[in-house]
Length: 108
Image (cartoon, rainbow, N blue to C red; front, side, top):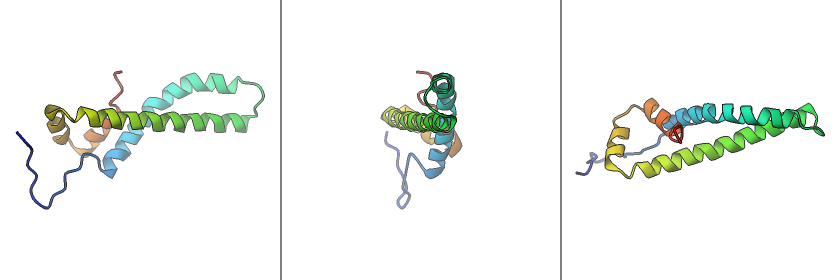
């Protein structure tokens, strides 16, 4: 059974609002992990002043966040191959969709 979309309506799985919610959710998921591991490693390291340590921490945080967000979107997109998952996803609001995408790797 295929999902029929009326003519003139474009069906997209990810909108800008969905990406915003997914970005916030994934940032919260990865920031505590990076902070828990990265703060002791970076701030107790000798040879760098406080500004360099802070910039290094922020760089690592954004680097790992972008990788995590990209993997969440990739694996969520792969999960949409299943018709039941796709219909369940499309039945949700944009906020719920964004939370689902941003936390897709949460249980792994």
